[in-house]
Amino acid sequence: MRPPPTPLKFGYGTNGFTNHRLTDVLAVLADLGYDGVALTLDHNHLDPYADDLPRRVGALARQLARHGLDVTVETGAPYLLDPWGKHLPTLMSDGSEVRIDLLRRALRIAADLGSPTVHLCSGPAPDGLPEQDAWKRLGAGVEAALETAQEYGVALAFEPEPYMFVDTVERCLRLAELVDGHPLFGITLDVGHAHCVEERPLLDCVGRAAPLLRNVQIEDMRRGIHQHLEFGAGEIDFPPVLAALRGLGHRGLVSVEIQGGSLDAPDVARRSIEFLRAAAAA
Image (cartoon, rainbow, N blue to C red; front, side, top):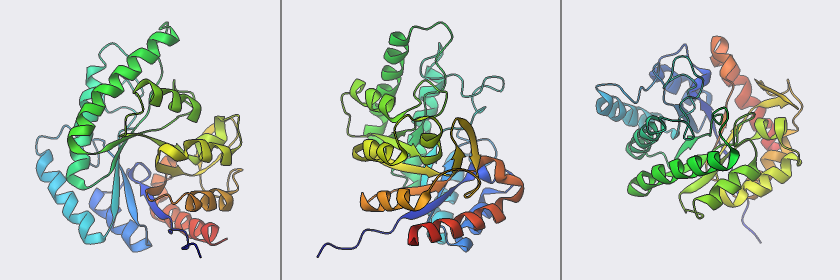
């Protein structure tokens, strides 16, 4: 007999708790029974440019251990590097060294926290930049970050994001080829994003991402509308998706990402974990 599939581990993104102190976020998630936290590096929770960053990271590592929470580090804060430009600069921009520096900081933080991955996305390509040149710049930027990833043994988990330059699993796989299939390059699959923009069925997207799958983000969504919704408010049939992830033996976090839920974050997080447990059981 084959052993039963490994249970999925559910996390919750700190970008859905922007009105809470990070210490309180961890306590709430632990009390609700989450297995981990997807930590977005940002000014309000853990600022990667803080003067006392080593002290903060050390304290956070102890808090995570006390609550028994896994962690994955994310770099998707939209205005961290440019207060006027969302997700700017990108690895394709003039001045991409600022983004590379953030990724290197994130990789060091991840290593200190015990996070196996750092999440990133492409952002938009600069206006007027030919697509071939955008791919070259993006590949070179990812390769630069992978040098630091190799140093710390932390993987880069690239997320296809709607309406960004890399917006589908197929384009993410093309990027993997550009970095010569580096063993520390992987994919973050956002279930809602795949439903929103992918031409292929959602379960096919899971299968295509599977060989490189490191992280999963999850929320409900409607086709063609990039809005992160609570479970049941969109169109996604979740039990087959969770069954597919479990069948793959996915061991990373499956993290809820509902950025617009901060005003009611504890209740949204409670409803989310209850929904996911029921869907997984189904």
